[in-house]
Length: 235
Image 1 (cartoon, helix red, strand yellow):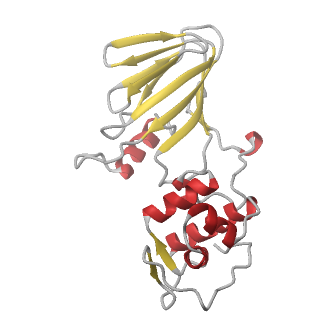
Image 2 (cartoon, one colour; image 1 turned 90 degrees about the horizontal axis):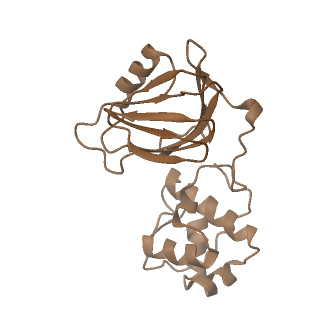
């Protein structure tokens, strides 16, 4: 990835105590990602290096080194710069388009449909295995029940019904949801979704992965094989 901005190296810049110079080494992918995002965010706000240095308390020399991927910034430095730019520290680690967002047109979305055609899933976030959360649109035909695949320990689901009604079952517990209702449940347990109505139900689901996967986590490859073998749609 290359920045659309012209990044000029300052030969007189001194090394900062909160960063490690890397000028003699090849660009590291993560360092370059941080540098590109910092340069983009600064350009969007029409800030010079000097202006950002004054606002953040981080030296101009360090900012220049970070943007050109010649230094490894500390968390403390990134927090200062993020506060000055009014963004999250996570903004420096995004792999979306360099303009700061990624448009996902509905007509070009890859909707995954079950073998019987009565259940479909549409991803609403970029295809990135490293993300901690998955966002999907679900469509469930009338009177259809869709069994979910138990996910890795610690995984939770936040689901909201946008049209129709849904009954969510987790083990032997059942909860009926009307339009606008939401529910949060442990997705590492046996669960299912049932549409008890006579019209199609639609819901939006956010799946949050465990931050620290337990040692007994089911390998992703095995889970994928199970899903494909069942109906080819994510649970």
